[in-house]
Amino acid sequence: MLQQVLVLCVGNICRSPIAEALFASRFKQSSHDVKVASAGLGALVDHPADKIAQELMIERGLDISEHRARQISSDIIFASDLILTMSSDQQKQVETIYPSTCGRVHRLGKWGRYDVPDPFQRPKLVFEQVLTLIEEGVDEWYRKLWN
Image (cartoon, rainbow, N blue to C red; front, side):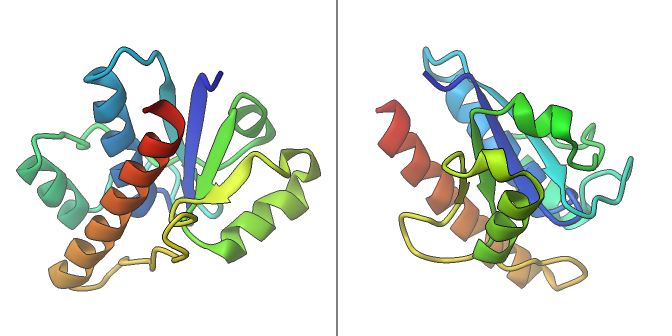
């Protein structure tokens, strides 16, 4: 049984905080007692979530303004039952740094066979497109594992 999901991206200020909030919202609305966390492979440690990401999440009734970026660590990795990355390259990077994670690390877009591009310092339209991909990935993982 999965108890801890970790979502990873690079800076931990755009994609992974969005995915973390969407998963947490899903679990809060269900009877599943699953914790969700996020981190970055090259985190902008202690930075808040990107302003555009915050705006888009507020539009969905989710507040990520308190989020602060954190760097991936062995403690975070080993406390996680499922680790979701935004790209296949990130998946390989995690598996290379932490070989014991093989089988627990997957792409968020695994079921749709896509990577989620980084919207950092891009226009709002790009963030909206990325959010759509993240929502699809969260929905697919939720259906596969918790429905």
